[in-house]
Amino acid sequence: MENHSVGRPKVNIEEYFANIKEFLYLGYSLHKACQLGLVPYRTVKHYYDTDEDFSKKIDRERNRINAKARLNLVKKIEEGNIKISLEWLKHTENDEFTMKQNEFNFDKRNWDEL
Image (cartoon, rainbow, N blue to C red; front, side, top):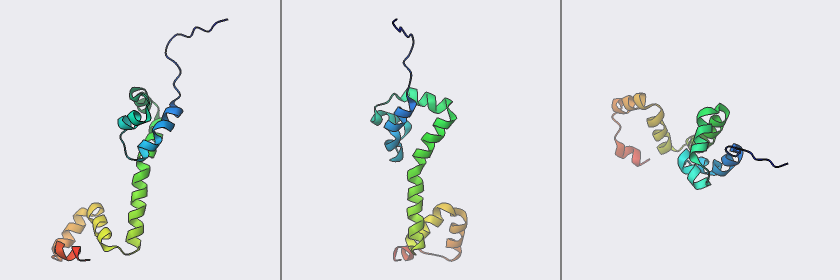
């Protein structure tokens, strides 16, 4: 008996994910990761838009490198790196840090010497 299936072939979304995972970790957009991983973007995008578990998996992978970068920064701050500490404050406590910087009349040239 012959099997004459009609319609589109079954998608192995986990295989697609495996092909794009590395590129997502490197910070590429979903579209670019699909291009580099040689998987159809529209199919992956459809699953991303309709499957909450799959979209969380994609988002987690895309954010993994940011978490690693944050961990590296925190390690440097804990080691006493003043420049990185200042940059961290500028980005996380911008309003308060800017106000304090003006209050104490810090000159950027002084910070560059640290």
